[in-house]
Image 1 (tube, rainbow, N blue to C red):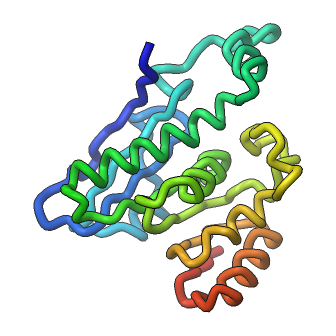
Image 2: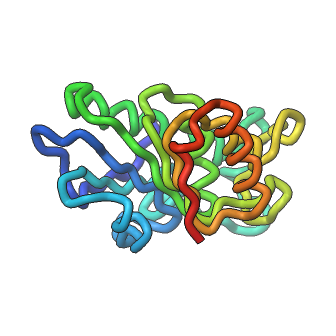
Image 3: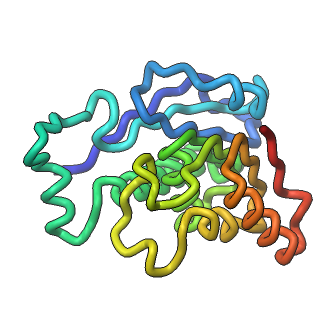
Length: 198
């Protein structure tokens, strides 16, 4: 059975659009994009809301225990959130192709969705930039998306730093994420592409 995700056009792509914003929601498609994203995007830019697997209309029941869906992913060596990362990357690729490869796709997310967006940008070359609001400080936080084995290689601050030299806006990010990102962008010679807002 194919995996289905929800995608809603708040401002659909039109001819001549040079930037597409893809907001990864943590609730459902009817959630209005947050004010901080409206400040980042303009009326001339397309804006879509993505509902990855298990969010909103595709939410499954979470009888606790046994949480069958989450457990089955672990048994396969994956997590639901690692699948969501691929959902985001695939949707970004789809939107770029929809524009005829003329528009750049920027990701936006808040909280755990910001972490998922960061990992999708590391995997998908069609993603041109990001705006991340309140990403988790660490994968040890309860709010952080579980990704198997991630702490063997890096934690959230290092993942955000690896986004250099992509244009990145950090909004109300934890101090560790801000500092690591600033250091990485400075070393990459792209300090001007990192914006921080509190």
